[in-house]
Image 1 (cartoon, chains in turn purple, orange):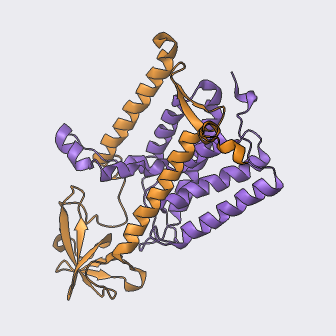
Image 2: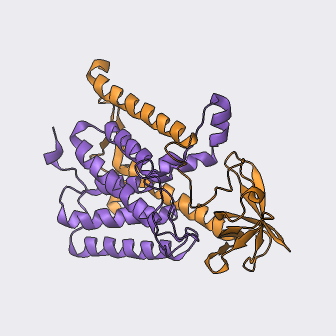
Image 3: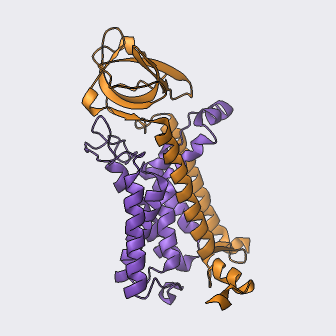
Length: 174
Length: 176
């Protein structure tokens, strides 16, 4: 994974640019995109509750890794969508999906010594993709580039485009 | 009220069960180990390097010895295993390395040196620290723009951002 700040800012950048084309992408849904961008990293819950502990306690095979795979992320997106009122579900689903997709796109181009990504599309596709990545998760420059770009987008939006709209769109009301 | 929300609660329950099922399938390596990389999975406790000569390995670990270079690898069951590297890059004890290579008959990994990545311990610490910043940013903007509506049992966008309501109460608005 790239560092979490880079993922979050990538979500902000994509949603902000999207808002220039689609009026319904207002600030709350930019926030949703940023949440979507970190959903795959929910697998870090394993640092607090190791999978081995659950395996021992329940005596069943267990792994948190599916949270960082396409199948698990889709289910988490569905869960997140069901938590909001139905008038917002379509757009929340879309923006969570956009955020999560940006996460995987960034992770696919991480440098791996073997030149093969992890099987991020599990369980739909169980092999990694042969991609020669170009950055490491511990590199400092992705966060610097993402921060500078996010500030640039925010400045352009605020200065020339009047800033992101804060209210939600009535067209999503049931 | 519960009856009104029943279909949604059932759907949420189905998603939770489905997610739990994926955790179990992932643990059972079905249809395949979701962490599987190319070659032999040296992080699997049942795999020993000596028994897989010629196998390709893609792994990472912390350097615990430099002459010869030996790395400590965390295994899938939370334990540790050790792997000796041949043709290793220049490393120091405590550094983190990502390597690929081929296992030899004595269980040493003949490393593809030019593709190896060496990281200082502080680089790993940086990764976690900056990630905490990212997580706090998301939590902050999420709470600022969304709220829990107990009447509708759902999460809703706020009519006004939380920070604006706070600055109004404390007189911050008059500053502008």
